[in-house]
Amino acid sequence: MNLWKMFFRHDDELWKLDEAKKTRKVWLTLIFLLAATILTFVWTAWIGLGTAPVSANMTGLSLFEYEWRKAWFMIGRIGYSLLFFTFILFFSTLIFWLFNSASYKKILIVQMNVLLIMLLERITWIPLLTYAGLDWSLSPLSFGIIASYFTEQTWIISFAGAASLFQLFIIRFQASSLKKISATRPVWIWTGLILWHLLLWSGAAALSFYDLELVYLLR
Image 1 (tube, rainbow, N blue to C red):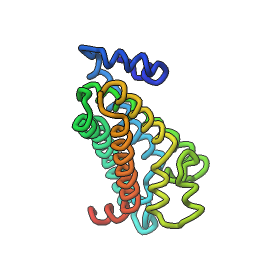
Image 2 (image 1 turned 90 degrees about the vertical axis):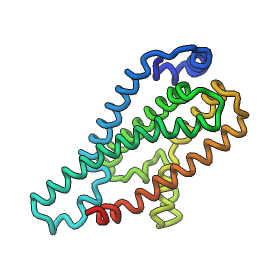
Image 3 (image 1 turned 180 degrees about the horizontal axis):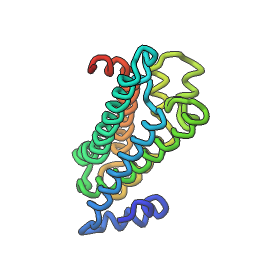
Image 4 (image 1 turned 120 degrees about the horizontal axis):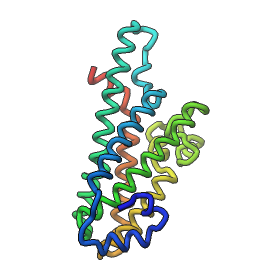
């Protein structure tokens, strides 16, 4: 299996996947994606993405307290990257497997590509924060910046920010892949994917909205 070929030779690779009796190098690819996920989250945390809860009331902290808080934040981001990796690959695959006729392993391979796209999206946030000072929800590749012109509600902006061009590409990629490797009717595939992603965007918006409150609750 080759994740990159799945993007550039999509139909051919899906035909191979559908016809395959055995898939190889799955564990090697999983290890690569796990390392890439951890490094991406550590990198974005290192440059300051998502550090608003840590920086809150920074002037009232001693240098030791501030460094201690940063260390725990980094540990938390590593833990979150592991949860993110597990959720996108294994839990999401389980949900799709329950409602589609394709095998769990073949859907897992599709989700590997989805995880790769999501990591690429997070990397695009780095120059936005570094050079423009924009949060992820205000990325020009998302609908968050449009929503900010119509409302000041943080949850709505975060929800629209989660609905990015990357996410729309993921929905289309998942739909075309599931139609190739399963016998489920396309209308049910599209319905399930749209509902699932609406739920994910709502969850992402909620996490963004309540992140500071959660930090204080867990202190």
